[in-house]
Length: 208
Image (tube, rainbow, N blue to C red; front, side, top):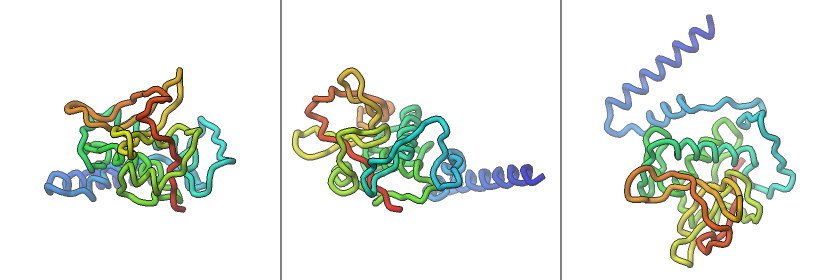
């Protein structure tokens, strides 16, 4: 009986939130509530997102660095953006089902999803790729899935960031958001490990 009441309650919340979205031209708070309702992940009693499929070793994790499990979770959300019809918009970091992001907005959103129901939070919720590189990441030469890939397109300062997937066949695979003029902007791409566009890799810093 309690389960039925819970289902009815959730349906009421969904209907009410949907009404808010339809009734107002700008209702970002309601959009986030609806988004969290749809995409919410179960959490373990320890306060981190549950994952029974993979074993993680954070024995050498730098102080303040994002745990491997949460970085991997952020990567899984990046895959959801890649599968959606995500459009590029500079400065945007829309939640899933909205959807417009830029490169740093994608990273921020995926990490915010991954950190739901945990004891962690981002150092900042609005930052550029250059700011992440300089202030909110820990340099690493051994990136894990979900860590950050910093890039440049002007051969000087960091101007782009992606979410690392893997090294394979001398290539660096990552998911990022890039303005391609039309069509969806979030895709998995790859560069040579020695490509001059690759500036370095970083572990996202978190607050706890």
